[in-house]
Length: 230
Image 1 (cartoon, rainbow, N blue to C red):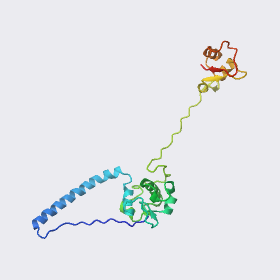
Image 2: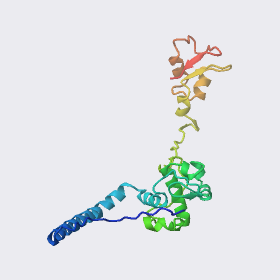
Image 3: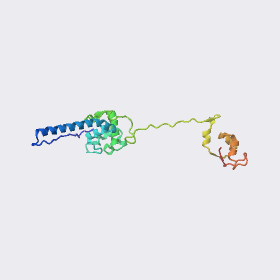
């Protein structure tokens, strides 16, 4: 990755020539006290902020690498907030998200970076990695496949429970009956044969009783006739 950006902080304080020694001591004491309180506050707040943002370390790397500009392309051969080379982006399957890193989202770039980190370690960002406190742990390195949606954890698909088929006298039972709420009479059928084939509880008599509205004789069936199963 490319490290061309660095942040520098310069402090300036007014020191009027007309101020008294006492005034300067008082001002210095106030400034020291204020800074001390601010530093203590920052020390306490930092862990909480870190916990809320699992990608905080990558944001620091990006701030160093590109000024936190995730879609930067200056034409120097490095792209995006974490300054991927085109070859590195392709090697770690970044093409799944975009043709180049600068065309991918922040989360997509971080997902690819986590795979680079797992393989190459923090040295893949030799300057900005150490400055940002990047490690395999802080950068959440992983060898897992890139998720379809960046930032989304892979969810294991649970196998559907297999319910063994019920059996009755060595043959498929109630589940078969459940699939046949009705039965259309075929050539050669009799109520007895149908009841036996579909394992109708109560046999042909139950089948006949369930169809009394349109069967006048249990021995007379018409091909194509629809029977209701009890």
